[in-house]
Length: 263
Image (tube, helix red, strand yellow):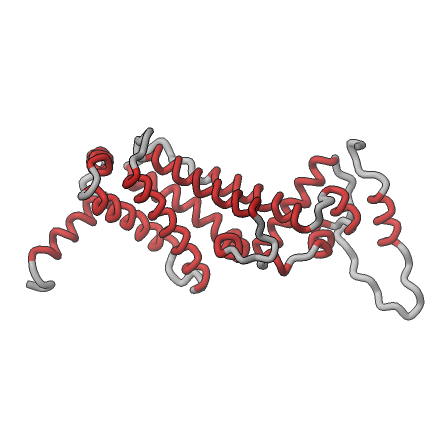
């Protein structure tokens, strides 16, 4: 394969440049065509497809849409993705999965609750950017869903599990601690979908803070039944500040357990 586009690209450009017959409606003009190296063109097509899949459910996006948005011909899109829309969708999905996974990185500084909040900020930035595509991906049921696309999504969840356990300082998690983390990840996903469905009515920062509290509350509840989780929670709380989210949450619980409100 040449380093730049030839053959089908030239044919596509010639067809696009042909003058319409008399009486035919004018053809819509494509974005200016540029010759790109093979890898750069492939990455451009994936980026354009990801943007389209993010704006609409995958089944509503066609190869013609991708070609039009990228300023390319349909034969050119097929040259790079001979498997058609399915192959392009999987490539876009892998690209999105890699980007989302990169946002799980925990910052080096801050208390545990501040670090978790920072990761959630990056996560919800991704959710907001990819909106409809994110919802279609997590809900499943898409006409382009396959075992391969499901495996891509599952790998993102496994990466989230690994990163969360690492954040908690755990090398080998027992069954209860693993269940806790997987359950909290499910809460984050469900909250993201509901947040999108309801038009992002809840401010992102409030949703993030609620999920941090959810993590603390779920961890505290699991600690009552699992020594490993109790040890992990104790270590995390030791790193918190006296006025941080964990301290405020515990203070509220203590205050409400004293008696009726206003008593």
